[in-house]
Structures are given as structure tokens and as C-alpha cells.
Length: 381
Ligand code: SF4
Ligand code: SF4
Image 1: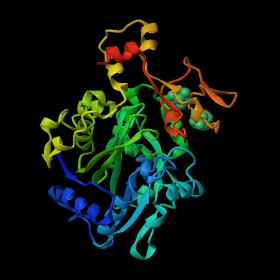
Image 2: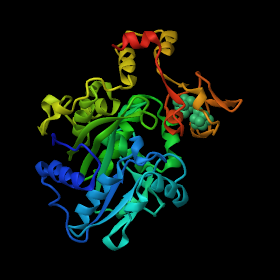
Image 3: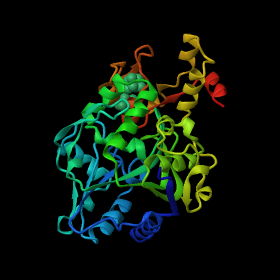
């Protein structure tokens, strides 16, 4: 198992600093020596939503620009892409490319392209733990290699979003709710994410942790300065280190628990081979989402009563009704049809809600949040 993780300081988004930090972070992993003239390389960014780079929800364009420059100088061409939630079409993705700062990066003469292939492929994956067949964004087939460039963030459902979670973007946006609906259990959904990253096997994983997102992630949280870039050839090892920065352990993050069980990563940073001073980047008061801890309490058999289980579950709530603009995005996104719009505000049916947090993720104004009861907070300590 490759357990090498590299981390270097990067304290601002400037091209000069980004190139220097990327060069440095990749050096212990062999740099970009594997890149050959004429290769096509997909940079799988996190473009989760129509948000400006300053919101820290998406991979910062300066870092993508720096990486694309380094790759094209070695004679490769680059395709930048992702499939966020919502329709997977050029008009919709153009809005995302514009908002996230990607449009300005396209330079056809230099061999830097934004993905414009919106075909959907069919994959069969008998080795998948849960995901045996699935539809995916076919532009990934064009790649001789994929570089997974994620963003470190909190996540309402999965607690943490990093390298592994970023590959959910390989599923076309309109298909994503089906996975939430058919696999509502966190462990199954986590295994789907692990299956995806293992199926596509990106050559390299890099995390934008200059500014991460804390609190109401992955789209409505608050930017939090970390000042680092991380890289690894093992997505799960990178995530063990990324979660550690936020004060989370592997057992707190469903995708990491699944990866540890499958023998894909050590379960703690003490068993990683770290290049750089990881401990220098720990943010002691990082505001996380406690999703996983509650699940553990249940799975350890301490909670058997259904009413108590309902009490302990974290759930979506209209946390900031004054922010709600009545756009119905939550209503349209909900895979369980658990939302009714009443007086232009969402009302969530607690019985049918599967706690996938798609509504919270895709609310454009961050009006929805994650609620934990007092008892859940106490028990999860
Ligand atoms: S209400 Fe929100 S969390 Fe519940 S099922 Fe619908 S989208 Fe998922
Ligand atoms: S997505 Fe957000 S703003 Fe839109 S209706 Fe739902 S809660 Fe309100």
C-alpha cells in the first residue's frame, strides 16, 4: 500500500506561489516525470456549484492554472472538467465554468481545454463493493491520466470532502440523486465513493487546502485558512492527512472507514509516510460536522430504540429562513421527494427524508443547514 503523503505551505493564490508549491509538493512523489509529450490529462476539479473561488467551495482556478501550465510545458494537453449536481449540459456547465473562474483558463493554442463532451458512458465493475455498474461522464475516457484536484471541506452527509469524495463528480449530475435514494445508508454510500475512486484510479491526487471550508460544507460553509497543498498517489492516505488537519479521525469519516476496512490506507497519520510538516497545518478549532460520530454510537449497539435513533440522527433544517429566496432548488434536488414548498419555503418531511443533505448542498444561498439535537451532541463527544 502506498502511504506517502506530501504537504507544503502555500499561503495565497498567486500563480508564482502556486507553481512553486505544486513543484515542491509533487517532488517526493516523483514530480511530473511520468508526463510524456502528447499525453491527454484530465484535471478533475471540484466544481460543485456556481460559486466564486472566494467562497472556497471549489478548487481554486489559480491552482488549476498552475498545474495546467506545468503539464502543457511538458508537452501534454489538458482537459478541465467535473459534473456537479444538476443537468449535465454545456449551457449549465458554462455557468459553472464562468462562476468558478475556469473559463479564463481555457487556452486552445496552449492545449488547455474545458470539457465540452457531455456524453455518458456505461461501466461494469464486478470488483466494486457496492457499485457493480454505473453511468459516468465519458470525457474521462479521453484521458491518458487523471489528476484529481480536490478541495478540503466539511460535508453534511460524509463529514469530510477531499480526494475520495471528489470522484462522485464522475457520475453525471442528473444521476446523482438516484445513488442517494437507493443507498441512503452512509456506509453503502461511502463504499460507492471508494468504488468510484478505485475504478478510475487517478494517477495523482492533489488537495487545495490554501483555504478549506468549515461549518456548513460542502457549499455553504465558511472559508478557513489552512495554508497548504497536499498530494499523494493514494486518495485515502491523502484524506487521512486532510481529515487530521480538521481534527477528524478515520472513524469519523465514512469513506475513510470503508477504505481502512478494505486495506486501502492506514487508519491514522502515524502510519502514513509524510513528507512535510503536517502538524504545522492542524487547525485546532476547525468547525466540523459530526455526522459520523452519531452513526458509530448506533452501530455499537448502545442505541436500540427507534425513537432515540430518530432523536440522534442529524437532519437538514431551514436554518436561516430569512436567507431563503424560494428558488425550489432543494425541492427539485431531493431524491426522496421529502420536501414540500409551503409559502415559498421548504418543509421537510422527517419520516421520508433519507438525510442525504443534497438540499443543503445545492441551496444557492446557504439557507439550509445540519441540525443535531443536544442529546446527540453530548453523546457524540
Ligand atoms: S430533505 Fe434533504 S436531506 Fe432529506 S432526502 Fe431530501 S434532499 Fe436529502
Ligand atoms: S434551495 Fe435554499 S433558497 Fe431555494 S427554496 Fe430551498 S432553502 Fe430556499
